[in-house]
Image 1 (spheres, helix red, strand yellow):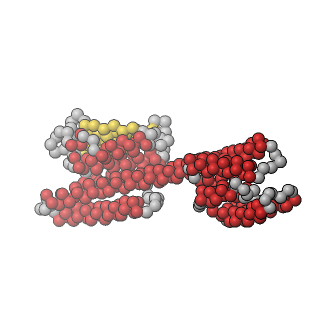
Image 2 (cartoon, rainbow, N blue to C red):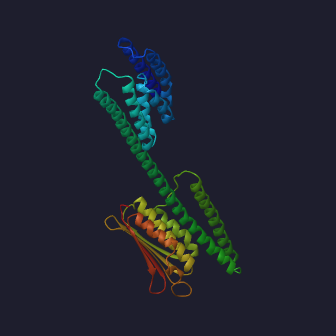
Image 3 (tube, one colour):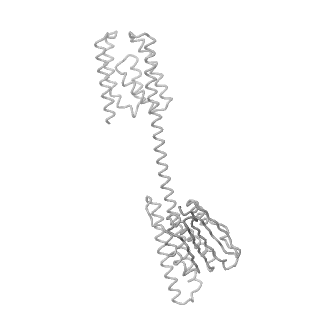
Length: 360
């Protein structure tokens, strides 16, 4: 609004200045042309308010009036500038061509003391200066718009990457819960004659894991519906709790030899690797022993190994073909700057091994 008022004020000042200069100089011939010029200049001033929304529509009558009027010089130049900045260059070229023709008609109708070549040169220079300024402003705005769009895309990308990472974390948690739930529910189904104490313990695990799974599912839905929020992330210190949680349903041995505090990202990645490996072991070799080994040094990095024995059939199972979980672990390890290896063991079991940098 302040810019519009400033432009209009300059337009009024320019109109009064040109009118005063003409009154003190030789009047145009015929005399009525002066009155027509003054009236046209007054009518042209309100068009300055249209330069943002309708620059071409406002420029056309100004171009026509410029064949005889000199008091519209400022509104015309402003509108030519607006056309270059706000409309396609082809449209601007047509408007400028028409304005140059109108300038030639003005030189013929109202010749000045300046030589003809000088008048033509002045008109061309003035139009070229306005066009150059308009092109500069046009491309500067385009660059600013592109930079703003790139910044917006980067923010959206960062937000989406954070959303994907949180969703992956919750996917791992949910898969872990559901595998425990399935294992204990299956035990209750196939051993209905088990002691009441054992059935009660299995039912308690089913109830607990169902509650936790529902909580994880609600968190996943909240991530998809709402902006990114901070969720509690597992650490290396939570690995013992993970193993203890799975121990009632599996034969697990944990050997941890870590020197110092594991960095947050490396610890979280190691936790997820062990969690996914235990989930796969329950799915494909639920009765097999599992050995979890974690070793870490500042200079050597963090090494995580999970080995489970063969399933009931004693040979390689469907886990020998990597699924989405293992592929996701590869991606997770790579994002942390490490690497992941997996494959069947000689006795038909399965081994997952990961190395993570200590600075991850």
